[in-house]
Length: 230
Image 1: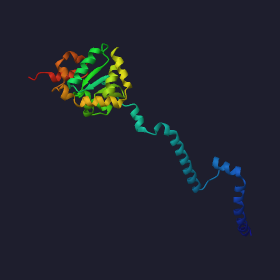
Image 2 (image 1 turned 90 degrees about the vertical axis):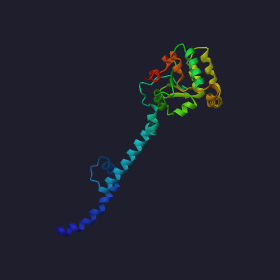
Image 3 (image 1 turned 180 degrees about the vertical axis):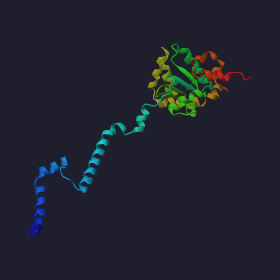
Image 4 (image 1 turned 90 degrees about the horizontal axis):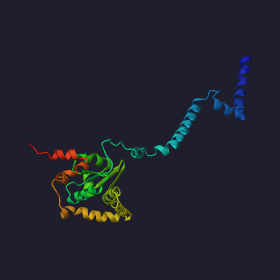
């Protein structure tokens, strides 16, 4: 009789169990938050996946302002070799016009703020790499490396160099108010014809005026090339 009664009561128990859980909403919430009951495998998978999605969304939202462009972030602080110096003019050392300009700047720069380097020297290569330029770029427009991550070319470089000179020469930097495209038209016109008009040497012209070498960061290399071969 006991077995028969149990068999009769079993359907009633199964029908009343969901009604208890559905009618007690706070109790259901408590179970889900404290995990006092044993959830099914499907509930565990679905809740874990949902939590993972929520966490992923939160991490993405937190990281977007900082890591949205890791390449650019790494580019803000590049690794600068300690041997590089600021305020260095890298120019075509075999050009007579360029050499004349360098001599003029050295004479006017009584506080010795500007340094120089011949493009034809190996010493110039780290500066070119720092600025992402090659020799052809600097042959077309000379380079002024003002500091880490800051460089100028062409007419803008010339005016920036003038700004470091004492008065009255620094006042000439006011020509920067002229739009850059207009200035570069004049600069490029002269630069393309400089060899034809002013001439070109076989080696760096500073070798002919060694008293200027103290202002050159590549002076040791230049002097080594100038040694007589025995």
